[in-house]
Length: 72
Image (tube, rainbow, N blue to C red; front, side, top):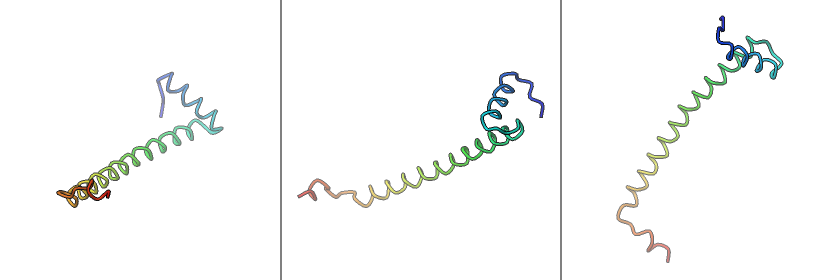
């Protein structure tokens, strides 16, 4: 890979310096971290979908029930 963008190249050098690794390892680290983040985005979407489904099921289960009356 030949990075021709000076700002990107500088960022890779800075990341490599901070991690005390080669530039290649810094790029690998950054790419893997971003891929993991994107993967967790899918997990987050799945969790939101399950929560919404549970909320809908709860609404259906309590439809017509006056929850204020249950307070006592």
